[in-house]
Image (cartoon, rainbow, N blue to C red; front, side, top):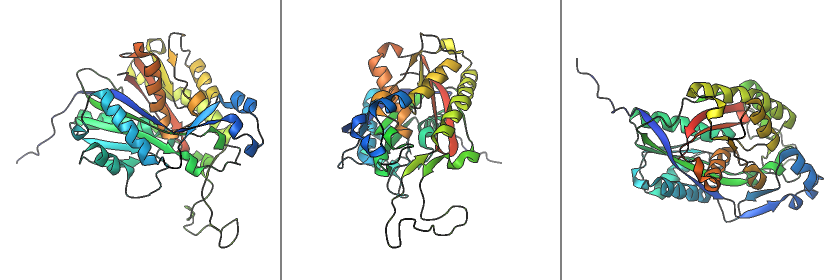
Amino acid sequence: MTTLKQNEINRYSRILGYGAARGEVLVHNNDIVEAINSSDEWITQRTGISTRHRASENQSVADLAFGSAHDALAAAGVEGADIGAVIVSTISHPYATPSLATLVAEEIGSKCPAYDISAACAGFCYGIAQADALVRSGAAQYVLVIGVEKLSDFIDNTERSISFLLGDGAGAAVVGVSDEPGIAPTVWGSDGSRWGTVGMTHSLLDIRNRDFVQNPVGEGEKIWPTLRQDGPSVFRWAVWEMAKVAQQALEAAGITADELGALIPHQANARIIDQMAKTLKLPESVAIARDIADAGNTSAASVPLAAHRLLRENPELSGTFALQIGFGAGLAFAAQVVVLP
């Protein structure tokens, strides 16, 4: 019997370069506090955020994705035509179909397979896990992974649970073949029992009974879905459960916390980041990405934007181990140790 031909297996993969694109408008706390009856001091103390980047009216989700893609390709020294797959994580692409990823592939000059994933704040780490598998299996030599959001399109400026946290941007990474391990096994999963903790205010269809949702505003008026969250529940889950996932990722990589060069967590809240570092007992030698103070929470773009900035400001971290972890709506989570490019 004739056996099927298989791809040549690549033993290892690694991140070759990060790229970034940020919203063009810098929004200060004082620009938004009146709408939510709050103060600059309250936002800073509760979240660690002082400003956030938001896209201009003329800056689309695609524009952000394109910018980060070209930046990552340049950093990695890889031509767009050589990319074997494009994976885009986003919850704010305005079209359910076709995907944003196919537009990105066209933009960089590749006819490769391209698809979107929806895992919110965990999405970039999900994408890295998939890119690692694609490269090691021989299905692609290079994979472009992008996390991109224009969350300002889905904000109710008077809503107090999440609107003041959110920013816009895109972060990208090129994953390619490596002679040595550069991406450790991913620890990932979801907790659907907390499905409604972070999400949209409503949908055209009620997922549970497949019936149309009644318009709470008034007959004939359009309702635009916006983001909201149960802040205290999300905070407790992130603080206690994600530290466990981070520890599992260290164990999967076969290293200890004191061997890390950096921690790159989802930029959800400065207090969550501080508590995670404390629970993991990170030594002072470990650099902690804190992009949130200036950029806010950018969901799927959060981890790569933070990584890009951390390397730009601390180039000596190149070649060290970094633990990156994303967690958010779904509730979905993913963490992996990587070698920084």
